Length: 342
Image (cartoon, rainbow, N blue to C red; front, side, top):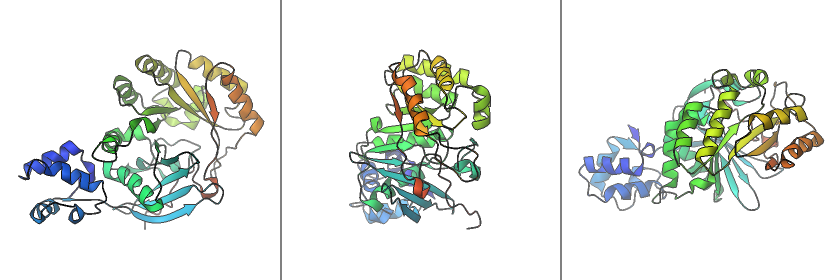
């Protein structure tokens, strides 16, 4: 059985045509899926014979909301979703005065093994399907009743290591007969998977790309981000310069700030020199504590000095406001209540 949420509108139209349905039925099925149908029986206007034919080979996937936590500090909502095979992932809905941002996962666990990240403790289990990615968006909205204004692929997993499904999910989200969600309000984050970054640079996908730089020191980055040994900083910097030549939209550099590790003025200078020729904004993220990880958040003054180094050089630099830390929903804290024995 195949999940209909794993197919684009054109693919569903092809499925419909192959079953001998009228030409317009493909659009009808696609719209039905993303306008509230929780199963094939719920697709409005579709004849029973067509529903029966579809149900013989296809289904519409669901998520089980295994747990839900709400921050007492800032109303951030963290969802623990159980997938069809019993694996678990987390998504975080971050409400703000002007917008609601959903942080979603792209994998069960993660293969990047970053030394500061809670998700890394799970190891890599599997990629999420396109439908499982979409369901996080669908369920977070329906469970809270909130309109999602921004979508960030910054949850569990490395999105560019599951690029085929992430790319398809973005296309379906953007489809005018689906959610018509603007690509300009989608951000995809990566530690620097160069082949996929090259594809993104060469195409006008219209979403924002964020690169987790973390440090401009290869020796330090090798320890914090083992993937750096495969895709070192000098090559990432070259790719970022290439991206800047191809696109007007600046890159976003994400820079988790660790006390005594990468938070000095010398660290700022090294990053500035490394990324000369790149159009970028800098998102400074004071470290969010993770149990049993030997890293600490720098004091506020240190973060401000780091930020000022860039702003005085006409580079937009922001210090991210911590959200959801009391429910382990802040950046780097997503680990899911993982229990492989169920």
